[in-house]
Length: 177
Image 1 (cartoon, helix red, strand yellow):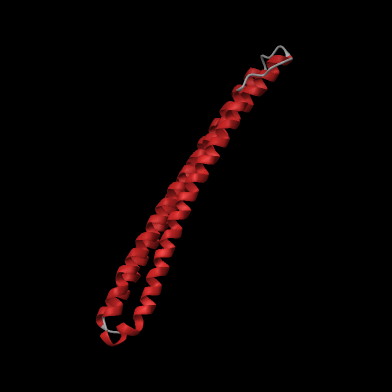
Image 2: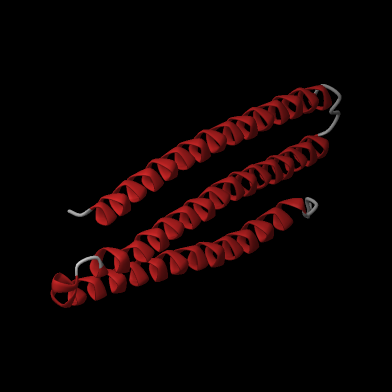
């Protein structure tokens, strides 16, 4: 291995170490965000439970009780939806950032391939098909990553619409015949 190829290999290892550090940092940031979301959700649930208990103590008729139950169900559904959307947003942000890091790594690897292949003219002709196959695999991987991100975004929109319809149904007033 000549000095040029060794420099490329060291550069790729350093870039890989930096990417691992960035991914670790992203994972910790995401864990903290999710912990914060969980704590805020638990606080809201407890506050609503106290409020509902206080309201229940003043109920005078079965209809009032049914209405309170509907109100509690609607509030619970809204909080759950809010929590799910916030959690999904955190996960989506992490996914997007990880895909970006992965694509950046793939670009760095791809850009270093021509230098490695061209460093020795006698082996360049023999290694060109291999380099073309590697570039093709990297391009295909990038395409798959982009498709995964697009599919996740479409799934988010479908889930949002479904959950919004459920919450709207839970908000409807109780109809007694």
